Image: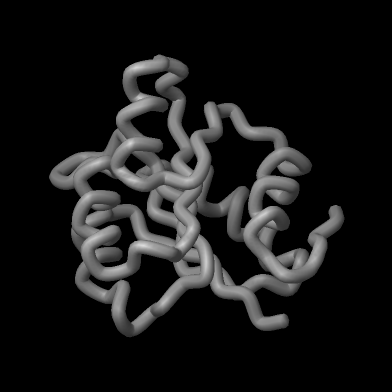
Length: 124
């Protein structure tokens, strides 16, 4: 199955929690605290799915999404944000996000979202 998920999130705590959850399901995880750094290595990493925070310093998630979609129009991107605002949600979806989840995110909900983009079902 060998699924690779890239997490781009400036919160260390959230990266650690997501990594623990996903690695427990035998998913390879690559995580970055910086969208700039993630974009630099995206061609080498070639993730199957990206979990992407909006609010990050230097380059925010929406700016990353615009640049990433130029390279990879089909890789699923799940936006993750504390911003529960219809304008952000609509903008993220317009720019190419496949989904928008609002923090705090329940592990079951995250796994269900990820499963929707895989050829097999994940279960906690």
